[in-house]
View 1 (cartoon, protein in one colour):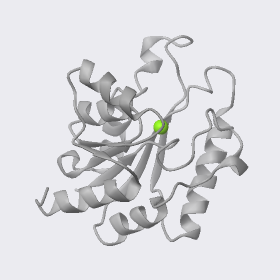
View 2 (view 1 turned 90 degrees about the horizontal axis):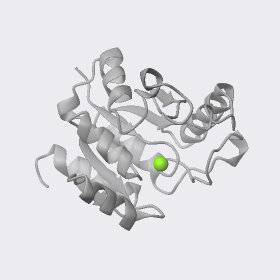
View 3 (view 1 turned 180 degrees about the vertical axis):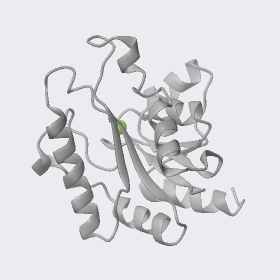
Length: 190
Ligand SMILES: [Mg+2]
């Protein structure tokens, strides 16, 4: 069984201007390549992206756009010696699609559970990292330790979680802090 880091994409790996459909807009955030390289090479984590991409359902982009952006994200990471092993995304939105389709949408743990089956991931030794309350909820719903990365609306994300009676395992100021938490946690040092 392998362990994995499940990652949100927009706002966690790359800068998030909202509904990114153009691969040339992708800017990888500071520390992400370095952190992912370390987690993968030194600690043997699979790196798996789980992303909501409801822009597809809203008609703002196509699945091909999402996949082209994913490819570009991986290409930019690979230039820095890092890489993503698999990308999962949910293109649906409850305003436009029936519940049997939107079941994949975070905060549902659906994509994590699916990836865990396909890649034989041990969830009890895995982590979720994201910049929204829905990422943390998704991770907690899948029983993986969940880290909230500080983004534009940190206070709002924390209060959303608080109102749901949920709490991230760790709140990180940036990606490198999230990686440091994971590495410490692995050795039981948190
Ligand atoms: Mg995000």
